[in-house]
Length: 199
Image (cartoon, rainbow, N blue to C red; front, side, top):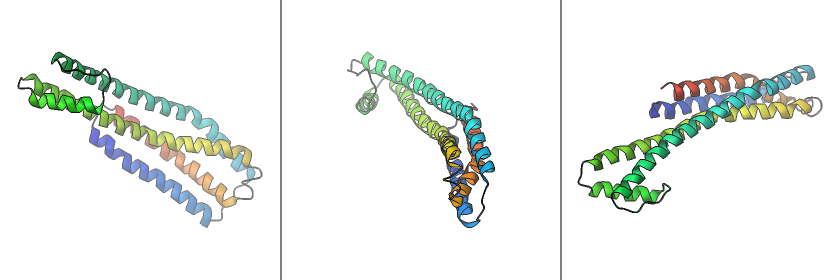
């Protein structure tokens, strides 16, 4: 998994989702479109029912990716803690910044060859921590967008009859947002799967 690719993939996906939301608001205010109650109910209810499973799958993938990378990171941390203990230095059972500093000092002062090997393990742990952060952020973006679409759809189903009848600009904004935002959010989720899980 390439950390740089995972980090940079977030920017265009965020830009696409923000553009959809901004264009939806613009279209809702400027076009004067109005949708009948039947179209409103069908649109909102279809997305509320259809996207629930996809949202659940995206959330599950987010949890799995974060947990998997966290487990690898924990394994490396345990190796580093054992090395400190083997060197006769006290080490807490849980990783923290103080332990990382102590480890760095011990590596610098260690004249034996394994100091370099331990430094590589420490660098690998740091890289995994960054990768976990970027991967979690990348998956969280489409999951949050889908959650917003599902929440709007569920809210709008009972509101489609009276409340949204009198607020056509808001209704048009919502319809554009969920209609065009859904494929973009699904595409972002698919991209996150490909980028994070391809290796």
